[in-house]
Length: 252
Image (cartoon, rainbow, N blue to C red):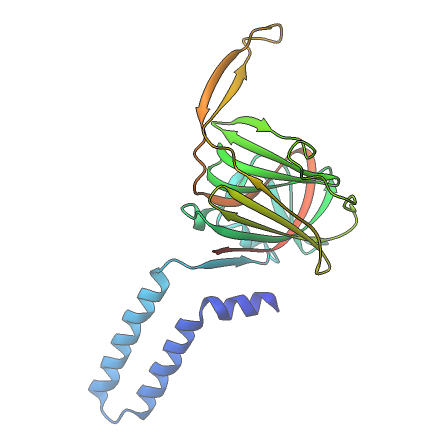
């Protein structure tokens, strides 16, 4: 039902243009006017199809819904659960149609199967993004810069849950990204159970690089944080596993 609703909402102008064109052609008495109406309709339709959408809804109810996702690893349709599952995807997957977006709401239904679900925001590419890792007891913010990781524990980021999430239950997550302010809300059957904000760090982050395992003075290399825009996505590493469906991303 949500798929039909968002399809109608996404194509409302095309549908109205089609109806108006058909009505005008039916009641037109002159062939030349009918031909002109069809030409105008085609021009309007081409314009509407080439404009950028203000939102995208992906239900993840069939395999074809993976087509516009960029990434590597296991991100596939699960027939028994009627959703997508993500696991063993070290770089993650990001949605290709909103790579230039900045301020938006990222919403999805999820169920943690093993350990966590990594929700990606402001992804410039697969090596540079922010990630909010949802675990049963809290959210661990990550920053990925040139494939290097900076991680904050849930307690450190003040994103601990009052009550642990169940591994047997579906939840809804809504993430609002407005400049460097990130608001995260979680819902259990429509009831809000978590509402907290976190700010994207600004400036420079230094990453440690060891020559080998015995290196006690690793090289500190600074990288600038530039996550003012970028797409959304998901990432789970190794045996981390979660189910996802009803993904919505819309501009704010």
